[in-house]
Length: 360
Ligand code: ADP
Ligand code: GN1
Ligand code: MG
Image (cartoon, rainbow, N blue to C red; front, side, top):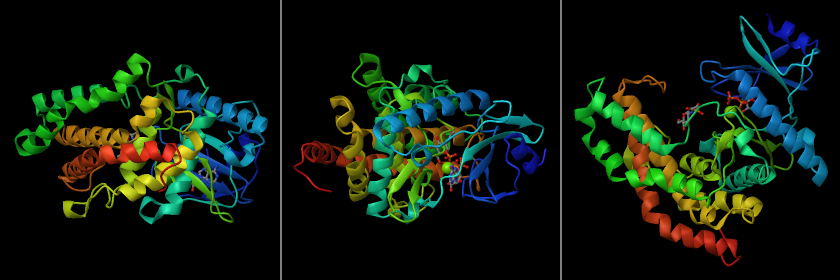
């Protein structure tokens, strides 16, 4: 069906034009600016119906909370619209489509353009998102990508790829392999916390790049978190750590010149200050203690995923040249080393900021 015909099934008789800057879904905005139509990328998201059930459940929960607490549900969360026969999606031979209300007068910021003020606002937006969902029973959500942040499982997959050596590259990645194996302890820290109950199972967003936060064009404040396709049960530390993995790096994830790749503690502090001011009082002591570690964890996990994919012949991540995954892996391990070196001082800063005795 044509986009216009899809929209009509949602009771909206208008033209739509491409919008947004996403790399996964195709996004269109209606001519009157009130609606967002998306074709969900079903190659990436193979369980779109479960994904929509997750999004509807979580956004309705947030909207109810916002109504109770005087927030603005039409602006501070995504709103899933229904077709005239009550469905949250249309699936036909051209794809899987859904409709949201457009959040007007908003813009997004790319990671390379984010300064300290934007980082603090983004931290606050992700903190608020977690705070609003603190009492949501995450076990009710579908695990749309099983074992997504199960780092022990990622390590198991790495060992299997190394053993199989299907692309014949194992010999050429000895230093990186040594890094993964000698830091294998990293994989169990958060999982141990989930197992012993010191880290709660919560709703995780799983794509906490700053460009998934909408900002208000007038106030420049963060309005809400979007792009909820990967929400699943997990630890809040995954979302905090993954945001910092990108935002606290001085270079792109695939920067080949490692002399340009550094962990920026000031970016960590800018983001964490916004985050802690929203959700700080809800986090458990163990979660708070592990905030710096979570950035290390996500760099280690992601680097291990890139290396695994390199060993398997680049079957998961899109690559532009043969060494692309290896280059990505190296930036992640460089970040991991620098965060490890800074971890104790960042922990002290988190503790001091939390009790009001430190500034950014
Ligand atoms: P992708 O998974 O492709 O990144 P997103 O859901 O993040 O898709 O949407 C892509 C872009 O579309 C966003 O960065 C934002 O600019 C715009 N967008 C998406 N949903 C809305 C909305 N409800 N209101 C306003 N803009 C939106
Ligand atoms: C993928 O699609 P994108 O680029 O937002 C991946 C993330 C990785 C990221 C690394 C579903 O995210 O987990 O951190 O690449 N998403 C999925 O660039 O695997
Ligand atoms: Mg996005």
